[in-house]
Image (cartoon, rainbow, N blue to C red):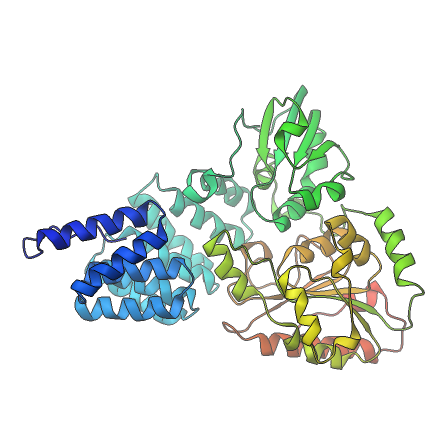
Length: 481
């Protein structure tokens, strides 16, 4: 945010009001900061630094259109303020107006060539639109200018990972632990260096979402083979599923329930510690299983119908405790009503909702609800979800934890991905190095779910027109155009 202006033209009471508002903002008291900014603008409505800071606060709160209006007002008050151009570009980027965002950030850099945040954010925008190599070049400049900035390193790591440069990307991704957002996830203790640890206990722990745990759990047996005892700390919903991973001695949802440990390692650091390259992922090997849950679901579902069973997930987790993740979830999620063309393209299929959380309630008002079985009350853990997936022929989902779960179980999964898709799916690919049965349907432009849904409906229609009984091979063999 903009530092208080100490220009002689600014009165002391205005300067004091700015200092107080910025202090609240920096302390994370967003409600207090908003009240202070509003009070300041009631007295001085054209105060450019306050308009800029208020706009940045609104962006953080997800009020993007209001943020955009505030940033425009800041630029009308002072069109030569680099910070306002930088924040204007950041808000445009969150609205997926990427061309305009780049123009705003470039304007900031014209006014202040040494503006490192704008430089890094320009790299982020380039990365989001798939121009990863250009983004890396920008991050190189930012890192050279500020070698100890963890945000710059983390952003460069993600761009490298998107291009499949896994060894150097995962190594640099360790800088994430120096960023404020990640410090709260860190657990104390000696950090495992990837070497043998015979006679010792290594605790691997979660650091982010459910999908991260599921994706990187494939490396747990390899890590366990290097030592004496490996224990795992994960969210409660994952405990029973992860208990079946080979090599894991014990799983709990609290570190103190695992007993004394000698070493710790975040689960997403396993790839770096084990020096994993892209060629070592082995996507064709399912590494999770839930046989008891599958048996329960087979009894619950009854006799297999003639047509395919298809699972559906249309929304990710809301992440209400994390502003940035909450905004990302809005971009990756859609509504059940938008999936109507998919159901209509497969009249002989039975559809099964794998959706949990508030979005599951959309079934109650869905026009084709009679075609979708609602299982939300039974999906109380990932082991239960895995059991249902084990009875399905295909899962169609947005980019959320169920995509990883279906892939890890070896179930064909068609993932509908946002335009600025996650680094883990790699640039320019419709398949995945992580999961052999995955097909990726990426938005051709920001927000264009219509094209994605049309492609999924087309391919499901092709599969349903085939003469063979539906099987994993039937669904796994189609490739999006």
